[in-house]
Image (tube, rainbow, N blue to C red; front, side, top):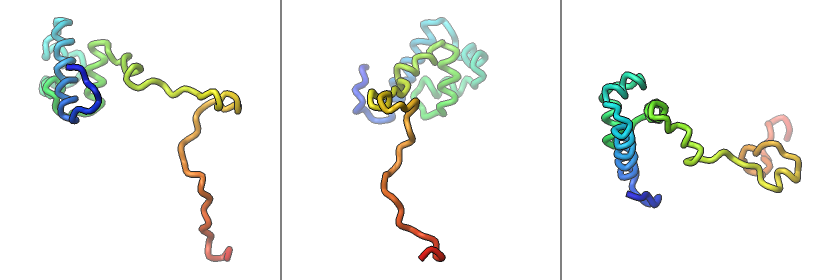
Length: 110
């Protein structure tokens, strides 16, 4: 199934689990072998592939074994500097924050 981004959270988890399962099977790795290589339990492997809500760490361990962890760059690209950042000499993005100055003062400053 092609994901559009409008699916429910549970639908995306199920699709991700199914894709990971098919990829693992394509590599001819059993769930037991996957558990041994990843350090996860067979139950956790089963939960991932069934679309259960598992920890990100568990998914990363799974992805590492099937050599897909590098694809995270496609999912979430690194932040790039904008042309204005470069023009102004910035080397990295600043943290987002409000530009509103506080008018609050300590009691002895009044």
